[in-house]
Length: 269
Ligand code: FPP
Image 1 (cartoon, rainbow, N blue to C red):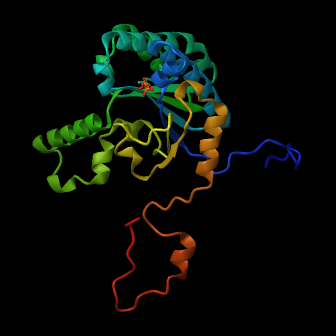
Image 2: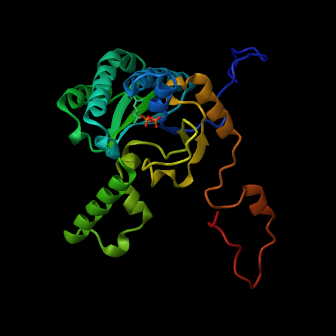
Image 3: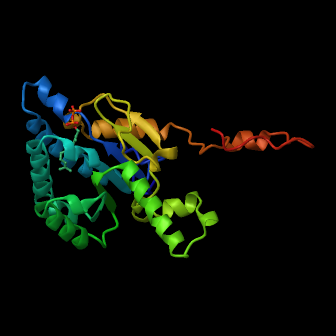
């Protein structure tokens, strides 16, 4: 605890904070339906929740926050809803520009952003460039993003490298594969994945990245999600023991050894 804080300070210092939090923002439509409102109003309140949660994550000290804002499959929604979501993204990028820049936030994206209309792509690229040197937090928007699509693209890149004679097939291992994923170049490993609205699915989000992430499912509909919901997920995360397929250090130290037998099995958790 810093010396200047009194011993009984009510400020709780971040203990075991995840470096990278991903959020599947779900429930905008149901939130609206429950209130007898059009789906679009749900998305508008969802955009307000984005503003709140980015601010909270920055204040708490999260290193990287990825928001699943538009999936590869969302293009198949009715054109009017797609247009509305694009307009909200445009408005978010313009209205939050100064808050992002003033708070040392670096904006990045993952996904097939070439598919986005120019009125989203242009302010997005401008803000990505203007914030590129920031180090206080990374805000990653997953846009036109699909986990399967990203894995397929990584496989394609490796195939090209093999076909060009730059890589041997036997050199294609998990590390080489991961290196082809944009997320691994741009972001720390995913520590915590939150999904709102009480649904328990990954829905083609960070499929590779989720391998050892902790999962947290919130009953809150995304438009209602606020700092206290994020804090609840972080508190839950702080209590978890992450083992990455091994055994806890203490147990490993106690293991008697297996003279003459196979070593104890590791890596199956
Ligand atoms: C899921 O709700 C949410 C989306 C498909 C889009 C998320 C978009 C926003 C939160 C607003 C704009 C984003 C930014 C970054 C400004 P749903 O429509 O699938 O809800 P439902 O499952 O209840 O129908």
